[in-house]
Amino acid sequence: MARGELAPWRPFRDLERWARRFPNFFEDWPFGEREEYFPALESFVKNGNLIVRADVPGVDPKDIDVSIVGNVLTIKGERKEQKEVKSEDYIRREASYGSFERRMTLPEGANTEKIAANFKNGVVEITMPVAKAAEAKKVPLQVESAKSEK
Image 1 (cartoon, rainbow, N blue to C red):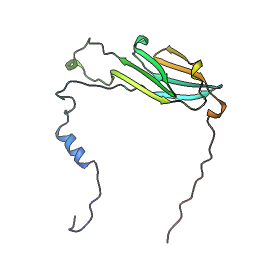
Image 2 (cartoon, rainbow, N blue to C red):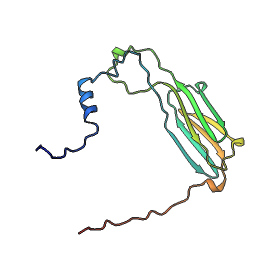
Image 3 (tube, rainbow, N blue to C red):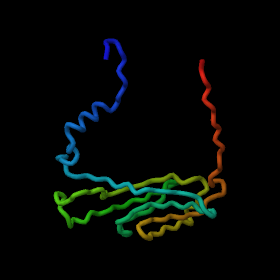
């Protein structure tokens, strides 16, 4: 690169270099393993009900707590690790374990007095009536064409 030329900005260049030099840094972290587990959530309105689902495979239902404070729904629990295999015996490990807490602000008109929570096949499903105003409304997307500049 000639003197005075601008170099392309690569914001992660130093991080990439660091990761190549220390590839096992987090695996060998001296403070012990601390994995986090974040169950996937989905929510939608169907037949006048708000339905919230949390994927919690491998979690015992007795380790799950569902609560509402004000207009915030909280699902928390823990996916406990089975200590049948030593960490050095793993060939590949992608499963996450640990405590989790997911929160979701409920839409206006959600009737929290008539909430129901069920667990089936590793999925927590929470259902409550919701006002018609909370249903999704289709918003048309305006597409602007690219203008050619001369």
